[in-house]
Amino acid sequence: MIDEVFYTKLIAELSNTDTTLVAVSKTKPVEDILALYNLGQRDFGENYVQELVEKQAQLPADIRWHFIGHLQSNKVKYIAPFVSLIHGVDSLKLLQEINKQGVKHNRIIDCLLQIYIAQEETKFGLDEEELAFIHKQLDSFTHARIIGYMGMASFTEDQQKIRKEFQYLKSISEKYRLPSMVNGLSSPALSMGMSADYKIAIEESSNMIRIGSLLFGSRS
Ligand SMILES: *Cc1c(COP(=O)(O)O)cnc(C)c1O
Image 1 (cartoon, rainbow, N blue to C red):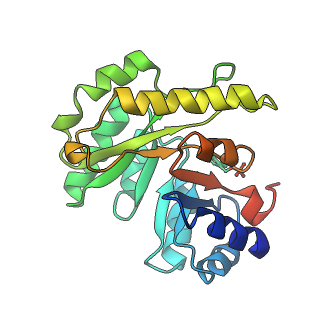
Image 2: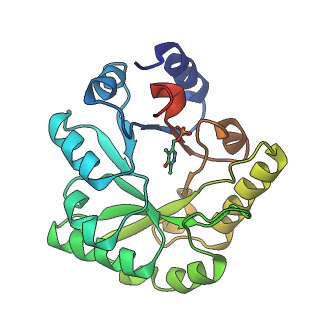
């Protein structure tokens, strides 16, 4: 069951911003995705490769699929033909594989670098040193295009801490400019904010929020 009332309110809230809503449909049935699709939603996020591949085959072709989970290099090939944006690029090896699959499928695959922003938890992501190392080489990837950054804040009640982590991601995006942002005309994608913290994320200049449970109900 989707929460149509919440969706309608959220879309209205976002309508005068440049924020993209990624509806996170992991573990949810295709019927729920279709219900949201019929309300106009086109961007959906999934965490598991096999689940994404199965759903993509059953659902309308104009859905933009975001891969938001931790992606293993040996699985890139399954989503490379159709994926719209890969949020969780956290190693050079993964980026090289995405580029290789992009060449193979003759398409440029858009990606975000996932940055480690949560201070207290072990989550995936690059630290600044690793980012600096990868950032220097971005020009060499012809078929994997980094268009922005993604981060996950700590799972905590401490709003101030969450805010600081989002501010850190924003500062990273300003410090490490991307070659894909031609002449600074466009700004990088900043994928931050989930059900629990999307309001803070938007205040801290997120332009891509990833919302699951508020739209689709809690996951078991
Ligand atoms: C599951 C997930 C979300 C959505 O989480 P909710 O709290 O249900 O909104 C967002 N981003 C990532 C990376 C996720 O794995």
